[in-house]
Length: 291
Image (cartoon, rainbow, N blue to C red; front, side):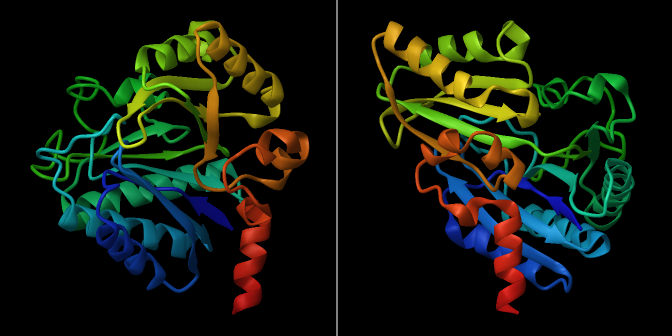
């Protein structure tokens, strides 16, 4: 089995995400484990799992549907993005390897260009260029200034480009502060992220959430096994207090492996609406039992 977690640049129109999830569900052997949308980020994340060939086909079809339904011209949102389908990461699960996912990513990229003429940039383990291993180096104004890995044009006129990758499990995790001041969230992000000397394997940025009247510390935890998760939470809590505010809530995007939950159960129990159906293995078992 493998997982794919495509991110789409639409978080305000539920009908669009339902339509994209619908084309995924049409592919036998691929299952939608869940999806989340956020209006401030203007972004949705769909979690797919199943047989490798089926997941590949489902992901490619989803990119095509997004290209039809999402127009990036005039798009606004606090999360950086380069395409209607911004990223398409393939993740190894039981019985598969990262090398398998690299091969799938390259094949998916070729199909995305062939079918929909959306150019593709490969990142993480699937990167052709060492400079493109880190996603944030590709996702910047004008991309990274180089031609796409696949495609004749740097971007599709309305759908932009898609970044296709292969990586191990990543946990998207956010902490919302009891303040609307995004400057405070940005200060905390600088304190905790690896690139500024903070926690290893933590990427972080501070953004405003206008719909909630809060600021958010938005994080990607790229190697949960090597992150002291409880210390990370405590550091955000202490920094927030030092800057005159507090943590309002934390949230998880997508699912987490059982190993992550068992490593730091208290960390995950603090998360808004967390229950054991958010554990990847449990969710897969639930879907299998329902068939």
